[in-house]
Amino acid sequence: MSKIAARNLDVTVNSVALEGFIDSYDLNIKPETPVVTTFADAGPRRVQGNYDWDQQFGGSADFASGQSDASIFALVAAGLVAQTIEPTGSAAGADTPTYTGSALLSNYGLKWGIGQGAKYSASMVGGSALTRNVA
Amino acid sequence: MIRLAKISHTLTRIYLDQWDLSGMLNAGGLTVKPETPVVTCLSDVGPRRVQGNYDHDANVGGFFDALDGTLGLTNIDAALNALKDDGSIAHYLTQVPALGAGLVAYDQLVVCAGEPRKWGTGQAIMLDASFVGSNGVARGNVLRTATITGTGDGAGVEQVATTAGQIYAVVFRVLSGTFDTFGLKIQDSDDDAATDAYADVTGLTATFADDDTPAVARVTTALATKLWKRVVVSAFTGTSAVILVTAGVIAGT
Image (cartoon, rainbow over the protein chains, first blue to last red):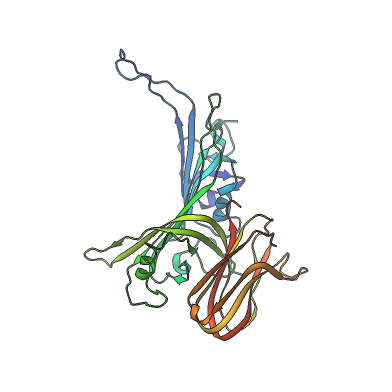
Protein backbone atom coordinates (compact mmCIF):
# COMPACT_ATOMS: atom_id res chain seq x y z
CA MET A 1 0.00 0.00 0.00
CA SER A 2 1.48 3.35 -1.00
CA LYS A 3 -0.66 6.43 -1.40
CA ILE A 4 -3.85 5.96 0.53
CA ALA A 5 -7.17 7.56 1.28
CA ALA A 6 -7.51 9.50 4.50
CA ARG A 7 -10.43 7.38 5.58
CA ASN A 8 -8.04 4.54 6.40
CA LEU A 9 -6.65 6.41 9.41
CA ASP A 10 -7.10 4.83 12.83
CA VAL A 11 -6.30 6.86 15.95
CA THR A 12 -6.44 5.49 19.49
CA VAL A 13 -6.03 7.84 22.44
CA ASN A 14 -6.06 6.53 25.98
CA SER A 15 -7.43 3.22 24.69
CA VAL A 16 -10.38 4.92 22.96
CA ALA A 17 -10.69 4.58 19.19
CA LEU A 18 -11.39 8.06 17.84
CA GLU A 19 -11.68 7.41 14.11
CA GLY A 20 -15.45 7.16 14.47
CA PHE A 21 -15.64 10.87 15.30
CA ILE A 22 -12.67 12.48 13.57
CA ASP A 23 -13.01 14.21 10.22
CA SER A 24 -9.59 15.87 10.24
CA TYR A 25 -6.30 14.95 11.82
CA ASP A 26 -2.85 16.56 11.73
CA LEU A 27 0.35 15.12 13.15
CA ASN A 28 3.30 17.55 13.31
CA ILE A 29 6.88 16.58 14.09
CA LYS A 30 9.24 19.50 14.60
CA PRO A 31 12.97 18.92 14.98
CA GLU A 32 14.93 21.69 16.66
CA THR A 33 17.13 23.44 14.10
CA PRO A 34 19.12 26.08 15.95
CA VAL A 35 21.12 28.49 13.82
CA VAL A 36 24.92 28.29 14.26
CA THR A 37 25.88 30.62 11.42
CA THR A 38 29.11 32.55 11.95
CA PHE A 39 30.59 35.58 10.23
CA ALA A 40 32.63 33.59 7.78
CA ASP A 41 29.76 31.45 6.56
CA ALA A 42 28.07 31.94 3.23
CA GLY A 43 24.54 30.84 3.68
CA PRO A 44 23.10 29.53 6.93
CA ARG A 45 24.47 26.83 9.17
CA ARG A 46 22.20 24.78 11.42
CA VAL A 47 22.40 21.73 13.58
CA GLN A 48 19.66 19.37 14.53
CA GLY A 49 18.75 18.90 18.14
CA ASN A 50 15.87 17.21 19.88
CA TYR A 51 12.37 17.33 18.42
CA ASP A 52 8.84 18.10 19.50
CA TRP A 53 5.54 16.81 18.20
CA ASP A 54 1.88 17.63 18.44
CA GLN A 55 -1.42 16.75 16.86
CA GLN A 56 -4.70 18.44 16.11
CA PHE A 57 -7.94 16.71 15.31
CA GLY A 58 -11.61 17.36 15.28
CA GLY A 59 -14.99 16.34 14.00
CA SER A 60 -18.62 16.06 14.94
CA ALA A 61 -19.06 16.05 18.71
CA ASP A 62 -20.63 12.90 20.09
CA PHE A 63 -22.17 13.37 23.53
CA ALA A 64 -23.17 9.76 24.16
CA SER A 65 -21.51 7.91 27.02
CA GLY A 66 -17.98 6.78 26.18
CA GLN A 67 -17.79 8.72 22.94
CA SER A 68 -15.80 11.78 21.86
CA ASP A 69 -16.96 14.39 24.37
CA ALA A 70 -16.72 12.13 27.40
CA SER A 71 -13.40 10.63 26.24
CA ILE A 72 -11.64 13.88 25.42
CA PHE A 73 -12.93 15.93 28.36
CA ALA A 74 -11.63 13.19 30.64
CA LEU A 75 -8.12 14.09 29.43
CA VAL A 76 -8.30 17.58 30.96
CA ALA A 77 -6.73 16.32 34.17
CA ALA A 78 -5.54 12.88 33.08
CA GLY A 79 -1.87 13.60 32.51
CA LEU A 80 0.08 11.71 29.86
CA VAL A 81 -1.93 9.21 27.84
CA ALA A 82 -0.74 6.64 25.35
CA GLN A 83 -1.80 6.89 21.75
CA THR A 84 -1.42 5.00 18.53
CA ILE A 85 -1.76 6.44 15.05
CA GLU A 86 -2.26 3.97 12.20
CA PRO A 87 -2.23 5.90 8.92
CA THR A 88 -3.22 2.84 6.91
CA GLY A 89 -5.60 1.40 9.48
CA SER A 90 -3.40 -1.66 9.85
CA ALA A 91 -1.00 -2.89 12.48
CA ALA A 92 2.67 -2.04 12.11
CA GLY A 93 4.41 -3.56 9.10
CA ALA A 94 6.98 -2.70 6.50
CA ASP A 95 4.34 -0.98 4.35
CA THR A 96 1.94 -0.06 7.16
CA PRO A 97 3.82 2.06 9.68
CA THR A 98 2.28 3.17 12.94
CA TYR A 99 3.23 5.99 15.30
CA THR A 100 3.13 5.58 19.06
CA GLY A 101 3.84 7.94 21.93
CA SER A 102 2.35 9.64 24.97
CA ALA A 103 0.78 13.07 24.90
CA LEU A 104 -1.12 15.65 26.92
CA LEU A 105 -4.34 17.39 26.01
CA SER A 106 -3.53 21.07 25.47
CA ASN A 107 -6.80 22.38 24.06
CA TYR A 108 -10.37 21.14 23.72
CA GLY A 109 -13.07 23.22 22.11
CA LEU A 110 -16.75 22.80 21.34
CA LYS A 111 -18.78 24.88 18.92
CA TRP A 112 -22.39 24.90 17.89
CA GLY A 113 -24.19 27.12 15.47
CA ILE A 114 -27.33 27.44 13.42
CA GLY A 115 -27.47 25.00 10.54
CA GLN A 116 -24.54 22.96 11.76
CA GLY A 117 -23.88 19.88 13.81
CA ALA A 118 -22.06 20.35 17.08
CA LYS A 119 -18.32 20.27 16.35
CA TYR A 120 -15.26 19.72 18.48
CA SER A 121 -11.54 20.38 18.07
CA ALA A 122 -8.67 19.13 20.17
CA SER A 123 -4.93 19.59 20.37
CA MET A 124 -2.47 17.31 22.09
CA VAL A 125 1.24 17.92 22.65
CA GLY A 126 3.92 15.28 22.96
CA GLY A 127 5.28 14.21 26.32
CA SER A 128 7.54 11.39 25.17
CA ALA A 129 9.45 10.14 22.19
CA LEU A 130 7.35 9.50 19.10
CA THR A 131 8.16 6.10 17.65
CA ARG A 132 7.55 5.06 14.07
CA ASN A 133 6.93 1.33 14.08
CA VAL A 134 7.29 -0.96 11.06
CA ALA A 135 7.04 -4.29 12.84
CA MET B 1 -33.76 8.69 29.06
CA ILE B 2 -32.68 9.87 25.65
CA ARG B 3 -29.04 9.29 24.68
CA LEU B 4 -27.95 11.62 21.92
CA ALA B 5 -24.74 11.15 20.01
CA LYS B 6 -23.98 13.54 17.17
CA ILE B 7 -26.49 16.37 17.22
CA SER B 8 -27.73 19.40 15.37
CA HIS B 9 -28.33 22.79 16.93
CA THR B 10 -32.09 22.57 17.34
CA LEU B 11 -31.96 21.53 20.99
CA THR B 12 -28.94 23.63 21.99
CA ARG B 13 -29.62 26.01 24.84
CA ILE B 14 -27.43 28.69 26.43
CA TYR B 15 -28.09 30.30 29.79
CA LEU B 16 -26.24 33.21 31.38
CA ASP B 17 -27.02 33.50 35.08
CA GLN B 18 -30.80 33.39 35.27
CA TRP B 19 -31.40 34.38 31.65
CA ASP B 20 -32.20 31.99 28.85
CA LEU B 21 -30.46 33.55 25.85
CA SER B 22 -31.25 30.70 23.46
CA GLY B 23 -33.83 32.73 21.58
CA MET B 24 -31.30 35.44 20.75
CA LEU B 25 -28.16 33.44 19.98
CA ASN B 26 -27.13 31.54 16.89
CA ALA B 27 -23.67 30.42 17.95
CA GLY B 28 -21.94 29.21 21.05
CA GLY B 29 -19.00 27.20 22.28
CA LEU B 30 -16.35 26.81 24.91
CA THR B 31 -12.69 25.89 25.11
CA VAL B 32 -10.78 24.14 27.89
CA LYS B 33 -7.01 24.60 27.84
CA PRO B 34 -4.85 22.54 30.20
CA GLU B 35 -1.38 23.87 30.98
CA THR B 36 1.31 21.73 29.37
CA PRO B 37 4.68 23.17 30.42
CA VAL B 38 7.76 21.75 28.74
CA VAL B 39 10.18 19.93 31.03
CA THR B 40 12.46 18.49 28.35
CA CYS B 41 16.06 17.95 29.42
CA LEU B 42 19.24 17.54 27.45
CA SER B 43 19.25 13.76 27.51
CA ASP B 44 15.63 13.33 26.47
CA VAL B 45 14.67 12.05 23.05
CA GLY B 46 11.49 13.78 22.07
CA PRO B 47 9.62 16.23 24.28
CA ARG B 48 8.69 15.90 27.90
CA ARG B 49 5.72 17.77 29.36
CA VAL B 50 3.64 17.74 32.51
CA GLN B 51 0.02 18.72 32.96
CA GLY B 52 -0.82 21.57 35.28
CA ASN B 53 -3.94 23.59 35.94
CA TYR B 54 -6.28 24.61 33.14
CA ASP B 55 -8.01 27.67 31.76
CA HIS B 56 -11.37 27.89 29.99
CA ASP B 57 -13.35 30.38 28.00
CA ALA B 58 -16.58 30.66 26.04
CA ASN B 59 -17.99 32.60 23.13
CA VAL B 60 -21.59 33.22 22.18
CA GLY B 61 -22.99 35.10 19.24
CA GLY B 62 -26.40 36.33 18.27
CA PHE B 63 -28.66 39.16 17.38
CA PHE B 64 -28.84 42.53 19.06
CA ASP B 65 -32.09 42.97 20.95
CA ALA B 66 -32.91 46.10 22.96
CA LEU B 67 -36.60 45.48 23.48
CA ASP B 68 -37.39 46.99 26.84
CA GLY B 69 -36.87 44.30 29.40
CA THR B 70 -36.80 46.43 32.55
CA LEU B 71 -37.23 44.02 35.43
CA GLY B 72 -35.43 40.78 34.74
CA LEU B 73 -33.34 42.13 31.84
CA THR B 74 -34.97 39.89 29.29
CA ASN B 75 -33.18 41.34 26.31
CA ILE B 76 -29.65 40.36 25.45
CA ASP B 77 -28.32 43.90 25.08
CA ALA B 78 -29.32 44.81 28.61
CA ALA B 79 -28.15 41.48 29.98
CA LEU B 80 -24.68 41.76 28.50
CA ASN B 81 -24.35 45.49 29.11
CA ALA B 82 -24.89 44.87 32.80
CA LEU B 83 -21.79 42.69 32.85
CA LYS B 84 -19.29 45.25 31.61
CA ASP B 85 -18.77 47.01 34.91
CA ASP B 86 -20.16 44.69 37.55
CA GLY B 87 -16.84 44.38 39.36
CA SER B 88 -15.76 41.19 37.65
CA ILE B 89 -18.29 39.08 39.49
CA ALA B 90 -18.14 35.53 38.24
CA HIS B 91 -21.28 34.59 36.33
CA TYR B 92 -22.88 31.23 35.68
CA LEU B 93 -22.75 30.26 32.02
CA THR B 94 -24.42 27.00 31.10
CA GLN B 95 -24.32 25.57 27.61
CA VAL B 96 -26.43 22.53 26.88
CA PRO B 97 -25.73 20.90 23.51
CA ALA B 98 -29.16 19.25 23.58
CA LEU B 99 -31.70 20.01 26.29
CA GLY B 100 -33.05 16.92 27.99
CA ALA B 101 -32.86 15.22 31.37
CA GLY B 102 -29.66 13.22 31.68
CA LEU B 103 -27.95 14.87 28.71
CA VAL B 104 -24.62 16.67 28.84
CA ALA B 105 -24.39 20.19 30.25
CA TYR B 106 -21.33 22.41 30.63
CA ASP B 107 -21.38 24.77 33.63
CA GLN B 108 -18.75 27.49 33.73
CA LEU B 109 -17.98 30.31 36.14
CA VAL B 110 -16.94 33.18 33.89
CA VAL B 111 -16.16 36.85 33.70
CA CYS B 112 -17.30 38.84 30.69
CA ALA B 113 -14.31 39.68 28.53
CA GLY B 114 -16.00 41.51 25.69
CA GLU B 115 -19.33 42.21 24.06
CA PRO B 116 -18.91 43.89 20.66
CA ARG B 117 -21.92 45.02 18.77
CA LYS B 118 -21.71 45.11 15.00
CA TRP B 119 -23.84 46.59 12.34
CA GLY B 120 -23.44 46.86 8.61
CA THR B 121 -25.46 47.31 5.49
CA GLY B 122 -27.66 44.38 4.53
CA GLN B 123 -27.26 42.70 7.92
CA ALA B 124 -29.07 42.35 11.17
CA ILE B 125 -27.30 44.01 14.08
CA MET B 126 -25.10 41.40 15.69
CA LEU B 127 -24.09 41.02 19.29
CA ASP B 128 -21.33 38.69 20.41
CA ALA B 129 -19.88 38.06 23.83
CA SER B 130 -16.71 36.41 25.04
CA PHE B 131 -16.15 35.09 28.51
CA VAL B 132 -13.07 33.90 30.34
CA GLY B 133 -13.08 31.39 33.12
CA SER B 134 -12.85 32.33 36.77
CA ASN B 135 -13.00 29.17 38.84
CA GLY B 136 -13.68 25.77 37.38
CA VAL B 137 -15.67 24.18 34.58
CA ALA B 138 -17.89 21.16 35.03
CA ARG B 139 -18.94 18.71 32.36
CA GLY B 140 -22.11 17.37 33.94
CA ASN B 141 -25.71 16.64 33.12
CA VAL B 142 -29.12 18.19 33.03
CA LEU B 143 -30.67 16.77 36.18
CA ARG B 144 -34.12 18.17 35.56
CA THR B 145 -35.83 20.39 33.01
CA ALA B 146 -39.52 20.66 33.78
CA THR B 147 -42.56 22.72 34.62
CA ILE B 148 -43.32 21.95 38.24
CA THR B 149 -46.71 22.42 39.85
CA GLY B 150 -46.16 20.89 43.27
CA THR B 151 -43.84 18.91 45.46
CA GLY B 152 -42.38 15.67 44.23
CA ASP B 153 -39.35 13.71 43.12
CA GLY B 154 -37.73 13.99 39.74
CA ALA B 155 -36.31 11.01 37.90
CA GLY B 156 -32.85 9.80 38.82
CA VAL B 157 -29.90 10.64 36.56
CA GLU B 158 -26.82 8.44 36.48
CA GLN B 159 -23.70 10.60 36.81
CA VAL B 160 -20.48 9.73 38.61
CA ALA B 161 -19.92 8.91 42.26
CA THR B 162 -17.61 11.50 43.78
CA THR B 163 -15.06 11.07 46.53
CA ALA B 164 -14.54 13.46 49.42
CA GLY B 165 -12.67 16.50 48.17
CA GLN B 166 -14.05 16.48 44.66
CA ILE B 167 -16.29 19.50 44.14
CA TYR B 168 -19.77 18.68 42.91
CA ALA B 169 -21.56 21.82 41.74
CA VAL B 170 -25.29 22.30 41.15
CA VAL B 171 -26.88 25.24 39.32
CA PHE B 172 -30.57 25.72 40.04
CA ARG B 173 -32.49 27.96 37.67
CA VAL B 174 -36.10 29.08 37.72
CA LEU B 175 -36.78 30.51 34.29
CA SER B 176 -40.40 31.60 34.67
CA GLY B 177 -43.52 30.87 36.65
CA THR B 178 -46.27 31.98 38.96
CA PHE B 179 -45.59 30.90 42.50
CA ASP B 180 -45.17 32.08 46.07
CA THR B 181 -42.22 29.97 47.12
CA PHE B 182 -40.68 26.59 46.57
CA GLY B 183 -37.54 24.70 47.39
CA LEU B 184 -35.29 22.40 45.39
CA LYS B 185 -32.85 19.87 46.78
CA ILE B 186 -30.55 17.13 45.49
CA GLN B 187 -30.78 13.54 46.68
CA ASP B 188 -28.44 10.68 45.81
CA SER B 189 -28.48 6.90 45.64
CA ASP B 190 -26.07 4.11 44.71
CA ASP B 191 -28.50 2.43 42.34
CA ASP B 192 -31.52 4.67 41.61
CA ALA B 193 -33.28 3.30 44.70
CA ALA B 194 -33.12 -0.32 43.54
CA THR B 195 -31.61 -1.26 46.90
CA ASP B 196 -30.32 2.08 48.21
CA ALA B 197 -33.00 4.68 48.95
CA TYR B 198 -32.45 8.24 47.91
CA ALA B 199 -31.29 10.60 50.66
CA ASP B 200 -30.63 14.31 50.84
CA VAL B 201 -27.14 15.54 49.98
CA THR B 202 -26.17 18.04 52.65
CA GLY B 203 -25.96 21.60 51.41
CA LEU B 204 -27.37 21.06 47.92
CA THR B 205 -30.59 23.04 48.32
CA ALA B 206 -32.09 26.30 47.09
CA THR B 207 -35.24 28.26 47.86
CA PHE B 208 -36.99 30.62 45.44
CA ALA B 209 -39.62 33.28 46.24
CA ASP B 210 -42.17 34.89 43.96
CA ASP B 211 -40.20 38.07 43.28
CA ASP B 212 -37.05 36.18 42.19
CA THR B 213 -38.12 35.10 38.68
CA PRO B 214 -36.04 34.51 36.69
CA ALA B 215 -33.46 33.41 39.25
CA VAL B 216 -30.36 31.28 39.66
CA ALA B 217 -28.57 29.72 42.57
CA ARG B 218 -25.34 27.71 42.59
CA VAL B 219 -24.33 25.43 45.43
CA THR B 220 -21.43 23.05 45.85
CA THR B 221 -20.31 20.24 48.08
CA ALA B 222 -16.96 18.57 48.67
CA LEU B 223 -18.61 15.62 50.42
CA ALA B 224 -18.66 12.27 48.70
CA THR B 225 -21.77 11.73 46.59
CA LYS B 226 -23.31 8.61 45.11
CA LEU B 227 -23.70 7.60 41.47
CA TRP B 228 -27.34 8.58 40.95
CA LYS B 229 -28.76 12.05 41.63
CA ARG B 230 -32.27 13.44 41.47
CA VAL B 231 -33.96 16.80 42.00
CA VAL B 232 -36.73 17.00 44.57
CA VAL B 233 -39.25 19.84 44.83
CA SER B 234 -40.19 20.67 48.40
CA ALA B 235 -42.76 22.99 49.93
CA PHE B 236 -44.21 24.34 46.69
CA THR B 237 -46.91 27.02 46.90
CA GLY B 238 -48.26 28.61 43.76
CA THR B 239 -49.35 27.63 40.25
CA SER B 240 -46.26 26.52 38.36
CA ALA B 241 -42.58 27.19 37.72
CA VAL B 242 -40.22 26.28 34.87
CA ILE B 243 -36.98 24.99 36.30
CA LEU B 244 -33.63 23.83 34.94
CA VAL B 245 -31.10 22.09 37.16
CA THR B 246 -27.63 21.19 35.90
CA ALA B 247 -24.85 19.59 37.90
CA GLY B 248 -21.42 18.07 37.55
CA VAL B 249 -17.95 17.66 38.99
CA ILE B 250 -15.55 20.58 38.66
CA ALA B 251 -12.74 19.39 36.38
CA GLY B 252 -9.45 18.96 38.17
CA THR B 253 -11.01 18.31 41.59
